[in-house]
Image 1 (cartoon, rainbow, N blue to C red):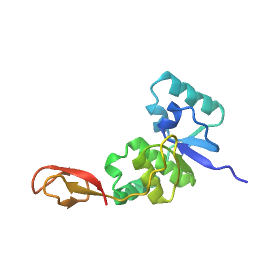
Image 2 (cartoon, rainbow, N blue to C red):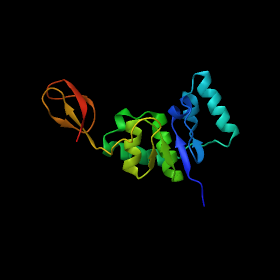
Image 3 (cartoon, rainbow, N blue to C red):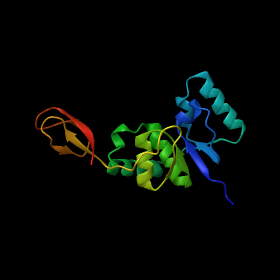
Image 4 (spheres, rainbow, N blue to C red):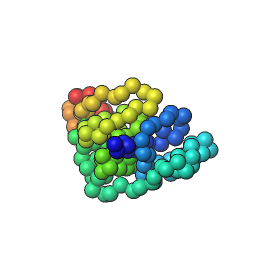
Length: 154
């Protein structure tokens, strides 16, 4: 039986939570680790078989398309995009507590393993002006009244 593959985000290395499976991360995850404890955990996992791999650009574009449809694109970091892209191309699960990353992964059919939070529900977001109520495709400033466009649950 094949072991499952898991792509954890940076949060995983800040915690002491065991995960079963083969671990793989994009280089951007390692770049986000700044404190000594998370770097030491990362090194420990490297010695135990953690692999580092860059996702393909096509996979990143697939994540961006899914995140745009779900309304999460504006709140995903480049690292989040890489984590989801790597999980998608490796048919792996994402280990995260980040709700936007989790939601995007779910919209792509990628499994999600919550670390400490409850499992996030799959959502579709819309963007609405906080002043006049006009709907938009992305955040920014309303072209009608000039107020902030905010993310709302659809």
